[in-house]
Amino acid sequence: MSFMARGTASGLDLTLDPPRRNPPKRIIVHLPQNRPVLKMPAGVEVVKRTGQSRRWDYAAVIEAYRNLRRRRPSQFQVWSVCRSPPPSTSPNAGCSL
Image (cartoon, rainbow, N blue to C red):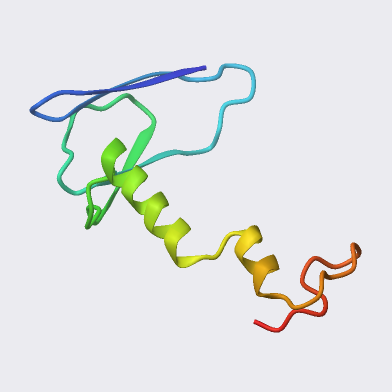
């Protein structure tokens, strides 16, 4: 089996070499509405979905990760809030946050 989706400025070019021994009943590709399909292989269905509200390029992923780290305290910060070190069986036992 081989499936390739090649994006161009005018849309997507889908190619499929389906499995021969145990072929699936259906092959469904979920695509955003703003991605038209230029070439559709036989036996493939396309289901349209709404586009993403945010562009997820490399810089956006790094920014989201940094914001996540700022909102959630690290393990060191949680331990420094505790008055006595918790037992080794439960990392947050004896600590009220």
